[in-house]
Image (cartoon, rainbow, N blue to C red):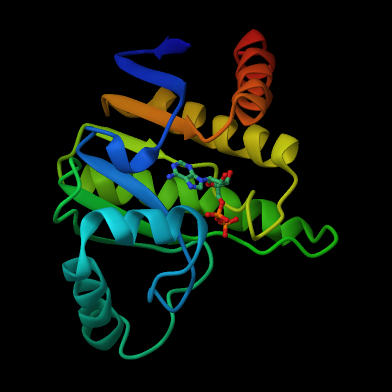
Length: 185
Ligand code: ADP
């Protein structure tokens, strides 16, 4: 399913993000940038060892050895992936409900979109950030993701944004969030 927002297209699909042919795919990384499970592991596996090396260089040079902060984003090449770039962002870990976590999740989407635009990219694919191991409730995460992306696309000329869901059930949650939000636009 997709909607048009100005000259931009927002699309929801079911699939494996490592197969996406958008210019950039987003990785739901952890602060270490050293890989992990879930989508992070799948992206590193498909991109090859060069991706880990690029992440090491970013940790050392750009981040001065510090971990990447929650809600922040950095960009690397995509190496063996069909996507030319990977934008790594760190979602919040769900911990009861601290309102700051909503802002941090929104920041992931916003910073990734801004970084893509700074690199003159016009297509990007996101996974459902924080809703796996980080346990963010998917209904709330979907609303935050879609609201942040639609708000951004209302003010920018970007191109194509895809949200790639890993299951039919996740897709349905995002689909109803999209309907709910577009009804109110
Ligand atoms: P987080 O630590 O941010 O919660 P996870 O990787 O555990 O990240 O999960 C984020 C979402 O990514 C989950 O919905 C999970 O099902 C999904 N996911 C896992 N592998 C893939 C993949 N190859 N493509 C797209 N989504 C994936």
